[in-house]
Image (cartoon, rainbow over all chains, first blue to last red; front, side, top):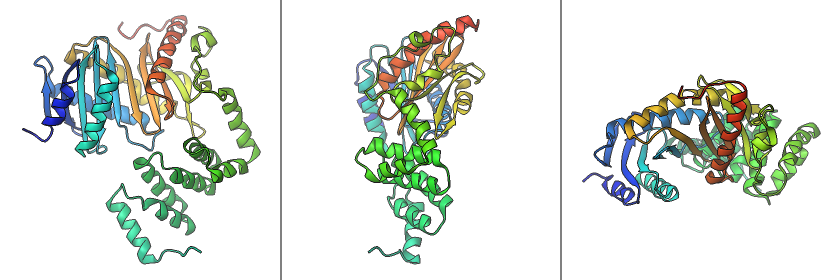
Length: 117
Length: 256
């Protein structure tokens, strides 16, 4: 059982969550995951890190503070990413369907991401 | 009476800050650099400290003073303005704001007055603007909203502004967000979640929400006091406004 297993299992207990992953922020490499079989973990990890990186650049003109939360809403669900440890740190990524409580995921994911550092 | 830190102590602070970015010694270090006339270095230290502590009142206060030293009154105003938002009782920041040249203060007050003094107001950009006006340029009149833009897929600003420190950062933000629609569309293949509806980002004192709207993307930037839910709501209003605005200009939908 990895260091991240507890984090992943806590996130996956939230109704509507289809899977969660811990990803290296810079490389987009999957460090650990617990996802439903139809979710390709490696591809989601790479995608999340890429979008996070682009999003960080979009805020650079404004913000002293690092990007800590990304929330992508789709027609039938969500992809969330909470960052911990700066650009060289981790992303806690959560995939969820449309009935998930967004506020609950945000609360848990950001808290757990901070705890990983 | 305060005594100046010794060279040895200064070296210790400098090493501590370099070793540990979370060290709060960045503040006395930046103050000392200022006292020694090293304004640029002090600004860099302050900004680095604020990356870790974005709500540190005294760091914003000092950064405002450093910008003032450097003759950048607009940025000084912004930093002291942040201080008062974080701590409305901060008399030093209030006094410094009042000490700014009348032209700068008047220009800023005009903008602030246009926002009103209450909490976030329900105000429809579509209703306020209509298809033939520039609804996005008017978004910064909403309380807590720094600005809003509409951009095309190539990352070109079509309308609006994202103003901070007296500078319009819309072009840089648009360039970064420009390819986002294509990037995000890939996720629908991985996840089977349908087309994308919205992107929300939080970074310390700022939240950015972007969403596809017709053949373009709308983005709105809010301050820390603006809740994500409120910004999302404004973003939805903007999408409606953008639909009409873009239809007049015959910009095709993203999926075509």
